[in-house]
Length: 452
Image 1 (cartoon, rainbow, N blue to C red):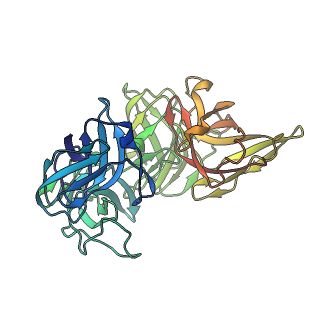
Image 2: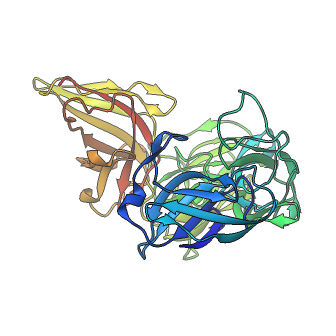
Image 3: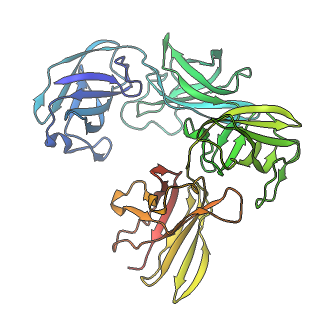
């Protein structure tokens, strides 16, 4: 029996063609989780869903807390607007028809992120439920390379209630998603502001956008809220802004002892307790300031104010927590062979560190990862190297996680590398993260080889 059908992104019952939906049903049998889907070439449930005469594209299944089933699928773009019946088939048989209304639009936004195009802050968005495209986009199969599918109706967007210029909006076949971009209005106030997308008179739920200065931990640049403004005491933060000039010149300080003012630039952090402290500045340039969050900054919402020649040019939020791990893409190896230790640089690619040769079984190999935001960890036992997609490898313990000791704000994680069972080393690459007190860092992409 089907119990509910909702927009997977917004959680609302409003449906539209080309939308990812969540269908809840009872009862559930183990056999419901078996079989595969040739459309996607990976394991999916022995469940099919039809909307009228059209078959939905099943993308996944899971169980809920009450033991029922949850199917995620895409409504085919060919489904016409109007009333329809949804029928689910699984190992137990065929459900009774579930009546739904298909509307032209059911917009929902995912978290947004931004970048600079000259002095303009441009926001990229991913959405669902933006309706028909022109030309029509397929539900199954990939279109010719370079073929674009603009939405038949261009949405409107507001930021803090101000109209934004929408640059583009298009479907992404064969999936349900849409993507596009818009310009933040020049007079939008700095800080966290609501973004509302509207199409065909229907508005999506607001999502938050950080207007103005973006405070990023290294490795998290270009992210979205809430991780965009997360930091820890004594962590390195990179602040960027499209429109505001943070300094006249490009200056670098001594990273061993960063000054509280660099050129004409100062950074002040007012923490959640109302205490204001000057931050040590590592570098300052017209579009970016790199600073270290002062020691003793209280957890909670802080404000980072950047001044030039004594005048505040930016004031933006910063969420402080005890640890907020972030790793740099400059890792290296220490290899101990026949009692002698040597340091090996780790070749890098677009994803960060490259191939790690574990060598013969008698080698001891340590991965040294520069990081920030981890020194306030609770204990060494609560720091590990986490394999993002290979849970069978487990979480590997670390030998050291703390301050690097020479440079302000810089931390270090030393990982004694294990050997993989013969024939299982992930030579094609695997994403790993540093986990500190259950908080995960950004990802490194590593390749492993070993002599079995």
